[in-house]
Image (cartoon, rainbow, N blue to C red):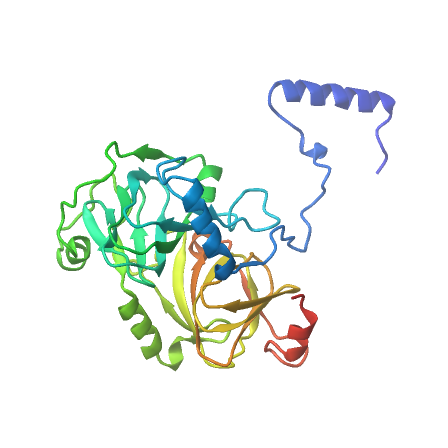
Length: 363
């Protein structure tokens, strides 16, 4: 195709200028060309070691009061390669500590949120929409959009948990809202089990119009027992035996934008390698092992957290003992908009994570 001459180029430049003043642009100015055939991943796999993070949380307690800033004392997970300070493109994750005698003030926000308890304490609890939920180790607690919540520690030990929510997604959609409660704490106005009982047994039950879901707790004793009681049909060759935390209202994903799961890997179990368009945050509930994500080797043990970015080829290998992982993944979002893809890579001869892969990956 002939290139436009000087006169034509000048005329096109004039048109481009006119369009710019009208907040328009011709597609011919797209200098990047058609989309690349290969998906490029900016984020890089990363692991945060609990034994290194925990003392920094305590240092923060000495320097930052719980009532300063956003009314929460947390350490945000910032995955390398992302332009925003977040764990994934759509999920914010952080580690929170509440010391004995402290109250993290009440507020509400538009994001879907969960709390996975790393270590609880007697008399430590979160109040969500008037119901008290005690914080026991490895419990999962849901704080749906626009529900009042505050955190209280009346015990004699610090409590720690993982905060996860979809704030990065909401900011990209310009739907982020936040409101302080006014008082430091809300009253405990509903009995234990109120929300669970109404959702399960009351056919006429309807959520208040301002609430985006139901407050809920999945107790660790029940969840871990259910995980270990699953049969062979629950085994995923890429993720081990999988227990999915189901939404209490409709049985779907835990939240509209985030699915939470538990994974059981038998001693020495090696998973098939896969990649998918969603991103996953893992927390090591128990055991130890190795995950190869791309060319990065992540050796994990109890308490650690690691991120596998979207479209990164990865596989797990458990250590000499049984390993349990908790995960938070944004696959419900991608499935809802028709953009979820998942590929299992067979490799050369062996579909599993081989010793060669372990040796080749970076430590």
